[in-house]
Length: 509
Image (cartoon, rainbow, N blue to C red; front, side):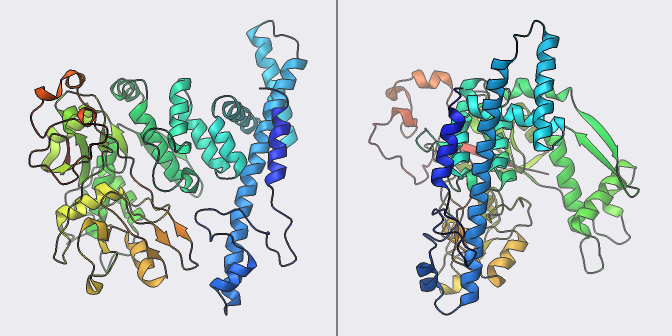
């Protein structure tokens, strides 16, 4: 990295910095941003809230918060570049290390100096040095977004973490998927910088698992050897007990305790779901029965897990991973075992071969069918409210346009918010935006801000290698792969009578 890089970045930061806060305490003309009102000047505030000064002040506060967040991101980018320059200058000043021990000593000295300058611990300083090195040498798109204020420091750290141990080409591909809209099959829906950090980590991990150069089968086989149970004492007579397990086992434990806790809910039960999960897990581990924690409690419903598996992978023709609801990609061998051991039913779901999204289905009557609820889980992945993690069966089907106002019971007019955000929609002034067959609805806040929805990262299914060598006259009519169509062909969205591209969705109990 050249020594002028930090100066150049600092110039860009200073050039893009907002004007000082005016006497009213509001930043002048913040940059337009999705999730904010366009422009944001006083004239527009007057037009939006002509007779409500309190609502104008609320809107101004939200604009200021958004600008502060962008400023924090720019400051983090400046810190990264200054640290990178510090490393370069320190390397130039130090004599060449004559041994690994001497190189380690030089590194320790630099870490200690950074820790003292920033008043942080040496472990924190060491992490900051490595993250800065990764951003300035291998993740240019992330550093640029951080400098522009469109990506927070927490998002940048997730990008560094998820690209660690990837080959440079794979790391650049992961970064480009989320930050370069010109790449093939880019991230869609809510921009990466506007995702809650934990949701961004979840989506980045899923993409990494799908596209890792080493097969998930091989990585899983190695990781199984690391399974363990951990115990850590805590304050106030409490302790943490955690288990590192294969995903199917961990998901099964979570869903069983959740189902048992749901069965215990009632007017006489004063424990929260979180407390009941802990009680049930402790009871089971200590030899008790989850279904009989109290007298007269009905047996818990059988836990359901949604498993989405490409049919070609289940048949052994490809090695693409399956998707375990609430977790992400799993090895297809694990999916086969789950299906063989526990699937009581399955649904055939047609997908669009161009992007892997489920195709539209609909009804003309008011009730939402069980199949449609499963379909909503496939389309939305979770409660569609920004940042919500709820993926449980407690999510509620909701008509976006009310049935009484002419709304239909088709997928494009349905959402599946969790109970909390379903209530918020009807009592808190928040409104869902439109949805489509494969896009969940965005949301509009009471102040008029628009928040994009988060889409599941559907991907086109893989084809067996030998199929790609077939000519079009060797493939049965109606079964042409996308690559065999003319460039200007429009793939039929209507379900084919016997489609060859499909996902099998298994309901495990």
